[in-house]
Length: 284
Image 1 (tube, rainbow, N blue to C red):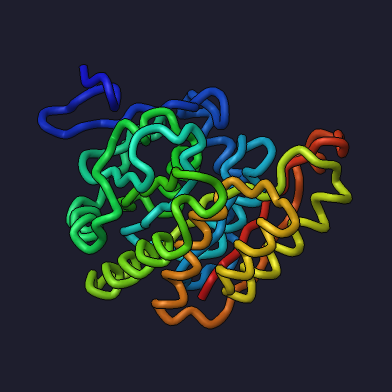
Image 2 (tube, rainbow, N blue to C red):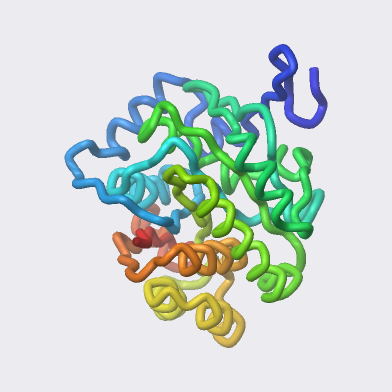
């Protein structure tokens, strides 16, 4: 038994689920039933460079996340960038080998691309411990697997001091390395920025703050996004991850972004006094 990731199969390190049964169901049959309702085959699919997708419990943000993955063609390789909520391990942590286990199957790490990313950016570190208990990427995996059973992933967690996580220069360097690796890969790669929006303010205030950051995202303006988070005090947990993905997407030629859906936890719970915002964006 491997103490960091939970287990080994031969020489392959397997990351075990940390939040199955909390953020999403623990049983394969229950996951399948949930995904039947969330990932819709009737929605027209488009080729995307990147998406912005929430990572709360599926009961709250699953509709938005499911709409995102229903609306894009998920290729065989996906680079996931999300916040390290616990700030465990390296500030910029890549999970570079093995596979991630889910109750509905294993998803392999795209090892060659992960290693290329590490080679292209000295800021990045190979670090499985940082990923062991983090939920921001894990909740995306069963949805990606449903959208493409052949999917491989490169998981990247961003820690450091919030919101700039070490500084914009560092985030731009990482974003540039991601774009360069995707260009050199020669195969389709989807970038996923995993983030929720404003946390634990009332619905009216969250709507105002979330609109400001979503407008910056749709305009593909990472610095405007960061400025608004700081100036208005938006508690957007994945702002650094989104900054990186926006920078990468621009480097890959992105010209257009569309907000597919915005909602809050209050739209599900009926409690509008302390909500969390969720937005789904497709970048082309």
